[in-house]
Image (cartoon, rainbow, N blue to C red; front, side, top):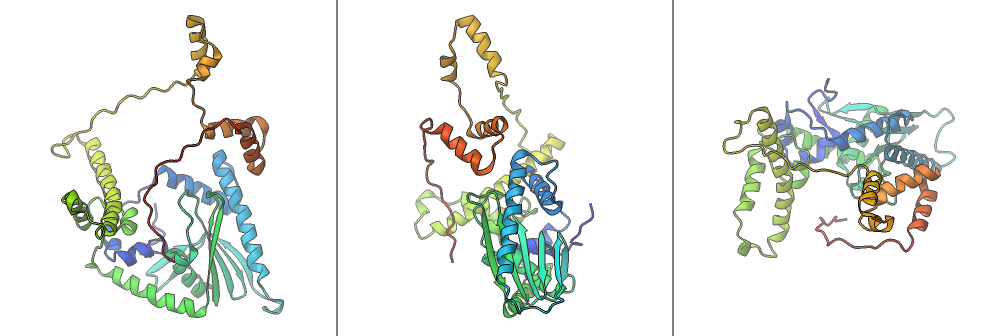
Length: 363
């Protein structure tokens, strides 16, 4: 597949390059890793771009439909800020989708999901279909770089960037406005990041953000060393003062360990002698009851088991229940949620999971 980025740094990789200048050189030539979640995201982005829901799963269609509604509201709010005399009568208006823009002497490029242009003002938006916590446009390196690239490409003096997240509850949209001074300052800072990352001897600095999607993490000496150091720490040496650094190292190590195991599994699948001292153990067989109705009929005939007794050992998934209600009633959106709440009222038992550690986001 042709590399649209021509081997150069992309806007989506800019934050990681700022944190680890050696990352672009370490990844060069390594293939992209594509997960099932990423493939689903690509499908939804394409549907969002062309306005066609064909080929999507039911939950994916809902996500794209919510994203379309969020986009319409975003554009309406953006245009409502225009003053009546802001533009001449023949002002340039465009709505571009999925275009790649280049800059910095073709050392950096980025592809936006959409860009609405009105004169010298631009609204650049990016769709995020994942379940991750809400992202803030003010801290997003990718959108910052895209704002600079788009301003240069289309002669814009102000660029509003927005992140659309339809898969959160409630759905989220975050905005940030870059004026001329902001764009000029960002251009200088981005140029410095690109220059540092272009150095073949640039230092590799492991960390949870830059290592998360790094294609080289399973073979990066610095990342492996950071993981190895954790194994040497005695529980007695863990102090409150050291916890912030240790937690960050743990976060990075979790991702590196996963990549290392995946690499070992890949090599052992190709050759059983590839990794000395290690082998692939046959996975346990897991059986699932796929015909509960047939099982009940057999048990009823053999043991006179009642329906009440059988139901008492069954677990109902709320996700599958929602899909069943939607299929049988034709409801969707808010009406579906209200009906589901009505039929479940008094029939559920809540249980909160143990508190989990989360990185504090500083303003």
